[in-house]
Length: 199
Length: 97
Image 1 (tube, each protein chain N blue to C red):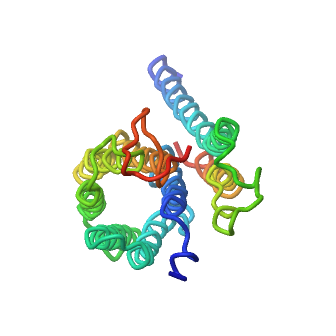
Image 2 (image 1 turned 135 degrees about the horizontal axis):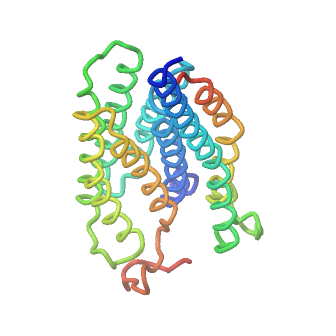
């Protein structure tokens, strides 16, 4: 009970992760615009977004630990933590030169596919139950569809479209997460069972 | 200088100019990313002032005062513009065509 009083609300955690995804999106967008050669001119910059992604994966573990509404929530948060760390670590290995294959970008595709599936599976309510339910469904399908971008990058690493799509994925995820409220209406719909609505 | 050599030289210059123009365009976009993000945060704050608990702090706990999403967006945009964008643009404009 004491911990429940001390810990932030789930919507706040969503906003913090939204900020992380916004940063990731801007970094990836810049890299896509200037190209990997220019981006890599300062060595520290190469580690920026993979390191950030890895760090966000690490931060998902406290989320998994403290926001355990149900077993499926814990499994979903744990899966996100692991795939984000795996994707970040794979990219870190590539930029460090320890990993050489272009197909390591498949780790990001796997990360998005697993994240999207976990989002859909752990949302037990229908689309118009409340805004949070709508956003989980929207996020899940968006992320699954956008897994095509890193998949394309694995086979065509120089594709500008795939790079821009991958970057935009994180910006869209950020916007959707910023829209989240623990209990709020969505397009005028709000279930009687969803609690007290907020704006 | 023969006409062929002059023609080839001019074409090289045109290609070089086009590459420089393309780099300049991309540099402008990179420089605009931060301000556009920050403006989006400001617009959001104006459109939904209730998302900023700092504007009505009475009775709010620590987490509600700490969680200010529109301010996060503005901060990300400002920091990106001040910390990252200048270096990226310098490297882009210095790059060989």
